[in-house]
Length: 173
Image 1 (cartoon, one colour):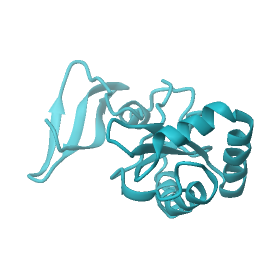
Image 2 (cartoon, rainbow, N blue to C red):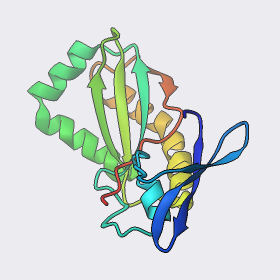
Image 3 (cartoon, rainbow, N blue to C red):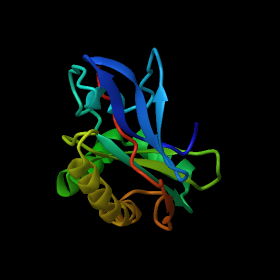
Image 4 (tube, rainbow, N blue to C red):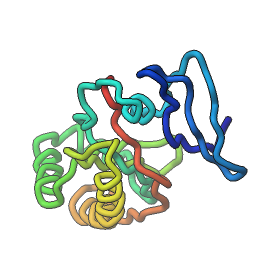
């Protein structure tokens, strides 16, 4: 079943018997002998009270976005031929803005994909997810502007889209 939201586990005597889901039609109980948590964030087992090691992934919560009109060849050449200068610029931006940043060329000419990593936030706490979403979206334009001003190949770059939601680091169960 697609387009459903996990609501809560169905538990009896510390045994999971299925899940409650919600969708546009209604709230429904799905009973099962075995329940597999495929949320990516461990939402089901965390809500069921199962022990887990960590809900703050080392790479953090990520917001991805694409930037167009990049001279990718020039940008990659700068990154490869002047790695110290490149890392100095990236570290300057990371220190100022407080998050990690990675970019990769895409198959679309002149387009790069950015991943902006906000560390130290939980993938299972709504306050952290909200903060990451708001902060992440605020900082997208600052990152594009920084790259435009400081990195060869990005002089005429502009934002074309952002991911509709955060990508979360996996919970280690």
